[in-house]
Picture 1: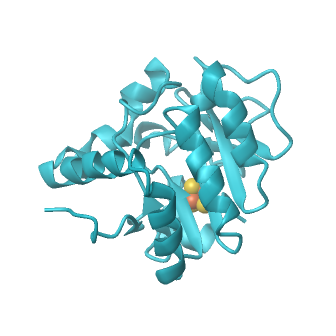
Picture 2: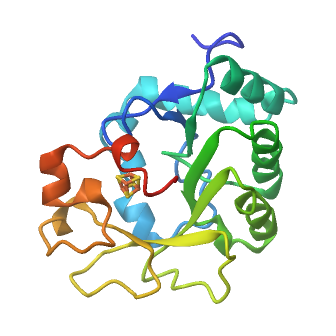
Length: 217
Ligand code: SF4
């Protein structure tokens, strides 16, 4: 079904907008820094992510990461497809330092592209340094994902911002640069720090990441 001529990247979903390209791998198996809270709420285990076709596609993507030509193929496709913004891991995360290093190599060879994503792998000692190296690149906007279980990291690199997963009606921590709310909390009073796609007024306006851009600009 998929072979080496299959494009690695796909276009964004209804939240991201079509202009943003996406790279994903299977959730949970590739999320060593995950918390019980995020595993419980993970959208990448629900809805269309349960379809066999989507699961097969993500498993294929994961296998591509292990191929010696992964970096070369990704760089070539980013160039030939005219990618402007690439969202890393709508599903999945940086599962080890070597994989994070591959993205550092890809970014260094794609300086005009903006890469962004959210990761809990900052919680894994063997991955943290590689992730900080990636986050330090000018073309990258990397967010450390946090929640009440992970707590707020003691040291946050200057190039990193914090995305907090809200799970109760309590006020988000002041350290949060952005707040994501699960559907059951989206009727709480709107706050400037909440993702615009997840507020009633943002939904009414049809905000997508492509039109918002807060996470990658
Ligand atoms: S804040 Fe904006 S860019 Fe970030 S996830 Fe929400 S809609 Fe997308």
